[in-house]
Image 1 (tube, one colour):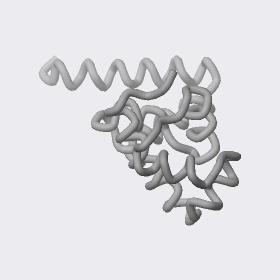
Image 2 (cartoon, one colour):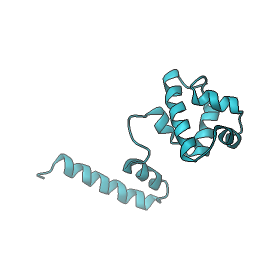
Image 3 (cartoon, helix red, strand yellow):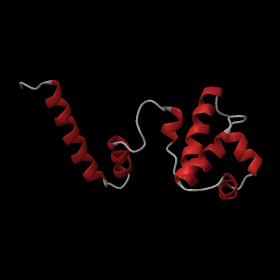
Length: 115
């Protein structure tokens, strides 16, 4: 199974951006990801798309958010939303309950400001 054409275009852009952010050449990136330089170039030029297993490996290795590839318009990687998502994984169950109650109170206040 591979990405759809539209998803592959988005992925190629995100991949290239992540590689450049890490100051990697295409060759170094290909070595890091354990695939050929020609495959790396083809991915970045949207001439092919990775298998789901390769997609997962690339995202994990280059610290790419899969959401950025699948839902590119929903949230920016550097946004507060993404920061919160990363922090949530470090919270225990008790902390998550407190955060959930706080978020519910904020949303409730926003929806009913006069209450």
